[in-house]
Amino acid sequence: MLRRHEDEAVPPETAALIGIDWGTSSLRAWRLSASGAVLDEAQAPWGILNLPEGGYPAALAALLSNWPDAAGLPLIACGMVGSASGWREVPYVDCPADGASLARALVRPEAAAGVSGVPGIVPGVRRRHPLPDVMRGEETQIVGALALHPGLAADSTLVLPGTHSKWARVRGGRIVGFATAMTGELFAVLSRHSILGRPADGAAAVTEDEARDAFRRGVLAAAASRQGVAPLLFSVRALFLDGGIGAAATRDYLSGLLVGDEVRAGLADRPGAGPTILVGEERLCGLYARAFDILGAPVPQSVGNTAPQGLYRIAMEAGYLTPANHAPEGRAEGGPT
Image: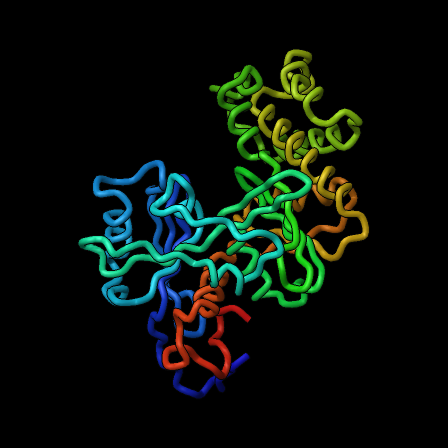
């Protein structure tokens, strides 16, 4: 790591790359320096299913409009922008996959009028056996996490909570397998569109202690079940009707059931594996860390959103940043290791 003495003048870093995470419901971008440091961030609610008039080029131009220095910089994007419903479909890369194989399969859409640059799109990753499974966007976060914590590259499990949570196994710095749990989507559907969510509608706000207790009860109930979570779901309503749980806490109990069942299954599927790390949004990773703790498992380290570092590393592998515009001696503070 390159360090400077405190009395040295530190010139401000300039942007060398624009990294983009373009998902189903949101669009985020980062200005990255030549050493990988995040200089600025922008976001908008223009996911691939909610684009403004003018589609992808208009959304991208609007998002980058406050960054005059973005003009002419290389752009790289990951996520659902590369799906069949995205800007351009990019074929999946099969496991085992790493930053180099993702960079080789990078696809650049044709330039669009009114956009100074168009992004290269990172492919997703596909697992073929024992059943097909796919990811788009998480592979880039995994590359970023491994860049930040290279010790995990030997043998580890990375858990990425979300709408479709991923449990990814890494060996030798490559994604060798993964499994998807639809925990986030199940929670959204059951809490918003089923009888289980009705008690919380219009209920007084739940206290922090009530929420924590309800979540814990849900995790423990899931852990004790030998039949999986499906036979337990109606207990959300039954407990409320029986007075065992308050209306406002029913969704926390449901969250505990679903997250607890996912973590229980994930732990059972990887006995004796290497270290586990949580990757993603702080609040959601916090819930998963609590579930690990409630189940008596070692609490994984959380590293936050590592997509910017993943985009930077893949861009380097793809030659987007040449020796003329990146720092060969190391990185500035705040960038990937």
